[in-house]
Length: 191
Image: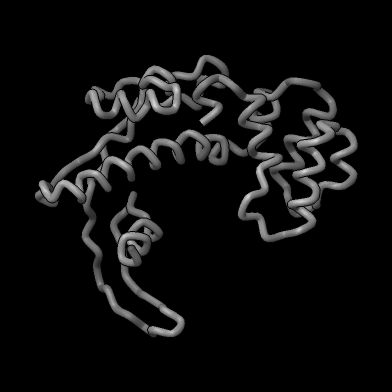
């Protein structure tokens, strides 16, 4: 989200220091310590080795103070894009939830993955404004290759070959078409 506001420092800090839901106590401790001290050189000594991407950012920032965009640029491209795509998915899923609640769907709807070329509705503009964004926020000036024009995605997908393999623990088997996410299907089933 912060990257869409051109706030790479905030986005990197969130990635490095946010520990809510983290189960690894060593990682929690390292994240909290970095949040307090902001000493990237020292963090290289105590940050867990298995936090590979965090260590890439820390290493860069220990050498190039305040070059947060440069640090992000050191990450694999697919991870960089994930920061943008995750927020697009969040907006998409909220819009889908509202569509389902309205009970006015036919099953053939396509919804927006909002980007800077999207023809947004007033409701979508309002959803973006709640985060201090506009559709133009998806056209990044820094690290412009992370910009997203936007696209459409089917709101509903066909779940094929569905079966329950076991109930305790719950194990499911099914297949989906490309561009569909099993986690979304499972989340919907468990609601």
